[in-house]
Length: 280
Image 1: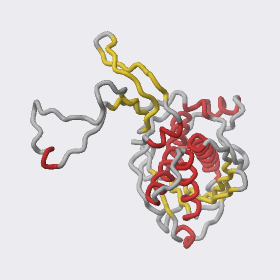
Image 2: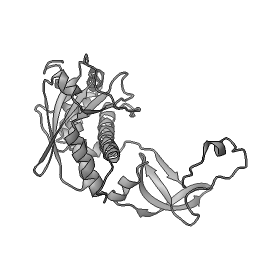
Image 3: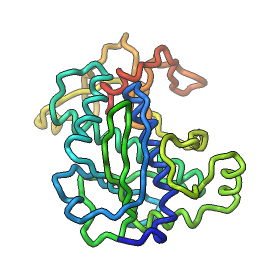
Image 4: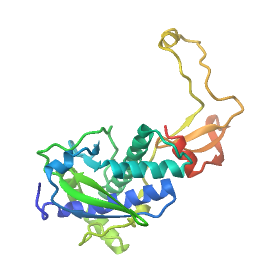
């Protein structure tokens, strides 16, 4: 494990990740969360001790993932709270697991958006997987603590050295503007809680798509499809279509034509609870 001095550049990244995690949890549960963090030495056996790990890679640097690990109590409690806020009380263990992982993915995506905005790089999340960090990893290791009321849940977050080094390319002007705004790009200490950099996400582009419906077909019917075949979708003609941002339904509307192009007139912006039930 690298020493504390080697992990100093990762402190800023850990702060942004903690802030994004707190914001995502609040958005998904309606509760107030704070997330503190500190760089610590973590035993190798701790990283392998029946923990659920998520490895998320990014295109900003080859071989530059973030690993997030949580023991059963932590990921189950987070997944349960999110599911309960969506009105689901008796959740299947696999649903709880996937809900927790979706929460982590959204927090990491938000962290990448801030890194992209400050570095001037076009960044995107690559496909993640359930992998623990290799024993030989020289990643910067942080212990996070998620708090809500009397609840305190520990998780581990490891930042790979190639990703940490990306911050060295952040233009000096971006750092100066951040400091002038009162939100230091690289803090001197180890603060926790919310990030004040939400405004940096406003220029980040997200894919927007429209779903007219779905269909489930046996493979034997799929291979019979030819030009002119009709596939019946699950949505009636009179029903509104879904507007999807970042794999999440955020609104529904009706199809219109604007100067020869298709468009969507928004009729309904759906609630946070319903968004959780419609994750694609």
